[in-house]
Image (tube, rainbow, N blue to C red; front, side):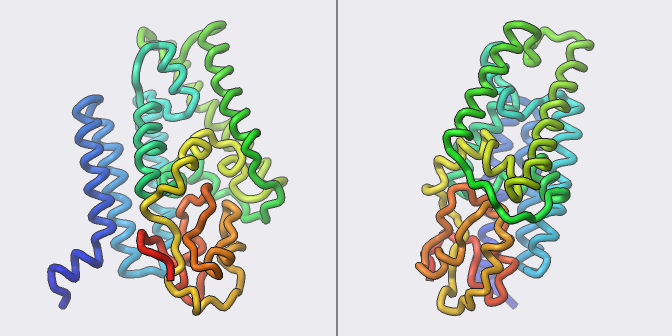
Length: 298
């Protein structure tokens, strides 16, 4: 039987994750409403449950991660977005700015894309993002034939900002706090339209450019959060580099185009700033060479 110290050490990562998200939930919930406490504490709780299960049954890592991601996607998109009308997409930040308000988009951006990346990089993309959940389920595992172009990613951000300015200037700002019931319906339709566009582009272009095309090439949240990847506390880390048999499975399953074999050979943490910590490489490794860790590689 494990002692208290051994038990805590074994489950320290999920306990830390749960604690951080619960604290965030309490702070944001007290400022913006109970739905935000439910959002962040719920994310922390589901990730806690997932990590505990995986510690006991590591062979279920991908199944558990996908299940949690789908559950969160349904709750967030079906609940907060469609029911409460909270838009979490990037354009909403600028609609809010023009309307002089703060909503879920800015809160999510600051916490998930400016703060959390220092803890666990782009893990939000493989665990919470509902568009990412759709790509996980429907997106084919295709070889990456088109690599990320930074100029295109930033041009896309500029285009989105331009669209928000044009729409709010020429038409109606979906963030207008004085909306009546008819305009609330318009807000929900805007949310639905945005996500249909993202998912359609992502699925169609994946057949041309490879897996998770939209995430790798265009996603504005990824573009911003990837700037902080090098400072991330936890990354995919080789812990038994000398046991690598160079089968290449880790590179093959990575949806973001990481050269994981190179990192293992050089005993470096995975250095691809687009890494979403989906742990597909961890699950595919026959020799258990890889894990998520804050420790130095071996």
